[in-house]
Length: 350
Image (tube, rainbow, N blue to C red; front, side):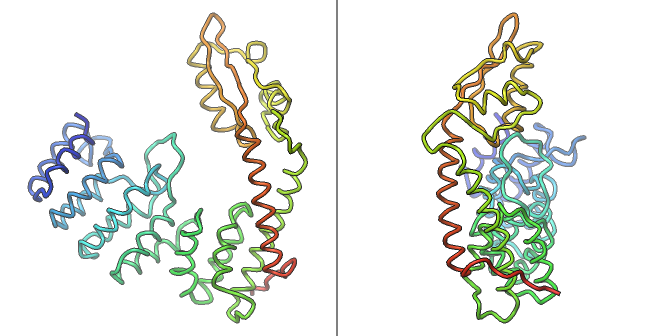
């Protein structure tokens, strides 16, 4: 039985007292080489941690909670699926005195995972800290969480996360903090600024006298310039479906790049790339999907034989996404142009 199944079995018997949980934690540590007593100090999985947090709520033992978060729970920043543990962490913050668990919880929420992962990264440290801060009642906990969030890299991907950032960081900030946050926002890529413009526009307009609208104009100007460039780029290729993916890039494999940009639906690598064995071909597929498919979409399959090769078959995904983006970007640009009455003036921030 895995550690995850073992803790889920224990969870089915809740409530479980603190002494039993301590015994269980020691047992899984020994059997599955988890925790600081093992040479590599391996952390528990996210799935295990979710279940154990639920058990901590019934045990009401702050020392045990602190031990678990310090020694067993993985650091959560960017960990795939980390949003699934936030609801129970919020319960933990509400269940225990903040001073008993603050250091351990801030460490797991405010630091990037050390776990190697192939999956899509989860929420950033700033996103996690703001999500917990927004949901807890304890003023001290909220203050510590927000203070740590304000010092993290500005990685906010959704409107809701930006809304919490506005409410907890921007709105109550003094001039110095506001300038620092504004500078962080303006250093972001314009492709990432959509949620910031949308959110800030809800709260500030031209009647603002604090300098916030001037910064919003500058952010919107940067976003609008990027939207115009993207619309022009996406508007160049045919609106009727074809297999052409004109912006695909693969300088290391020019024959594959030519295929992706051309009208053919499928190809093989038999005449353009050699593989030592089937594992080499599969490794090529894994790395290719991670590095080369930003402006293309296709399925790839390794074929074994005396000379292994890869078949590449295009999908409609890139074409459909491009058409959807074009419509969305046009709509967004029209709304921003109307809201800001033309090109906004650049903010003057001393």
